[in-house]
View: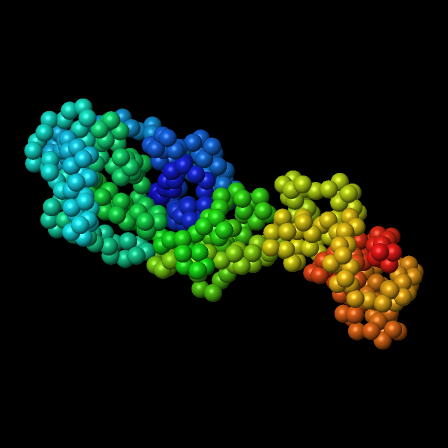
Amino acid sequence: MRTRFAPSPTGHLHIGGARTAIFAWLQAKANNGKFLIRFEDTDKERSEKEYVDSIINSLKWLGIEPDEKPIFQSDQISKHREIALDLLKQGLAYSCNVSPERLEEVRKIQQQNKQQPRYDGFSRDLNLPHEKGNVIRFKMPLDGVTTFEDQVLKTISINNKELDDFIILRSDGTPTYNFCAAIDDLEMQITNVIRGDDHITNTLKQINILKALNSELPEYAHLPMVLSSSGKRLSKREGAVDIQEYKKMGYLKEAMVNYLIKLGWSYKEQELFSVDELIKYFDIKDVNSSAAKFSQELLDFYNNHYLKKFKLEGLYKYIDENFLLSEKFINNDKKTEIIDLLREGSNNISELVDELTFFYEDPYLTDEIINAIQIDKNLLALFKEELKEVNFKDKLLIGVFIDSFLSKNKLKFPLLGKPLRLILTGKTNAPSISDLLYLIGKENCINRIDNYLNS
């Protein structure tokens, strides 16, 4: 088995493309096959090396690497042109000199008649000599149907009269996408084409090219689109961002792979998979034929799981190497304990790093925060004085002290905990009071309480 991922290097790798690449890679690995990459870079104006590097780096981060050196479609143009001219010679294609003005006129008439705009075959039987400025069009079958069994969507069929004679060689001698893709799949000996369902029309054209070349057809699997949670196309606000941006935000590759695989595929009731398990269980035929919906909440769930599963020392090293940490935090003796606490409630590492600040910097108490702190200052002063005598080397002793203080003063915990959390962190949502006291440290906690008492 030989599968391929064939992106155009005109942009970064996004969620939909990453899922396609993972499915193609897994299908190859599950069948002891090879996974290849082909950059379809014939759009010279928009193709950039920056995007080639970005796509390769994103795939590498996800753990996906090709089994052979990536192919660039532009390197094969002379081969494409040679085959197009050979089809012309065999009478399987023809030269066409119809002007853009006539094509536009025919299109308008078709639209007025509520017909699908398509080339009307004007030059098909004229046997024009191929001259400079002409295009070469492929002769699509006039009768019958083009059909194939899709491994995801099942039988797909269309009457050939619905397909027009599409251009395979432009007037400047450059080959077109559908022609190049078909030839490249043949040359690369691709056995399984896995791509988005927006390519179905392209597949129908490419099948006819391959049939004209007496080639064996690959198996096709078209993946339904990934939509937003509301069922619309993905936007930058929801999902349609560079995969590298997820890495920068602190999403782990294990979480991203698990999330992407769940966009349309499942195995029994299992939610979390190792790579070995994915290779063992994956089959493209099990992909759902309905569109998948992007869910930030589910991605966060997976990432939180893997953050908590990460060995603590390894997680600290990863954060230190990939995120900017304050010198004050790096020099904190309890830094790994702080990370261990914060990862419990963090969706990603960026969130976690943002939360680190109040462990080494006094919060700025705005008027709004001060007004929200509802506690008797005399009671707080008493709490501070008794806190000075607590042994901070053991977090359990801090918890015992708090329970004792509440009991002696006949207080319910929220009456102390809520204002104290604001005083210590400037936030309403923060870890438990005993954790905060222990990890911020006695001296800093007392200073922060004094800052409030003196405000």
